[in-house]
Length: 56
Image (cartoon, rainbow, N blue to C red; front, side, top):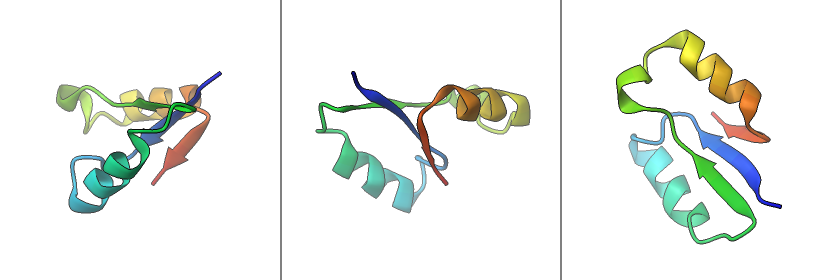
């Protein structure tokens, strides 16, 4: 079973670095938010509640 991980701010420099380091792991499923909904607080809250781990 893969743990769902959301990187809040994955489009930024630090988020890109974290994504690159975790993307090769088979025990993790990286979850992304639709770029059009990135600023939508409700969409972010829904995603945060749906994952096992969020990196802020």
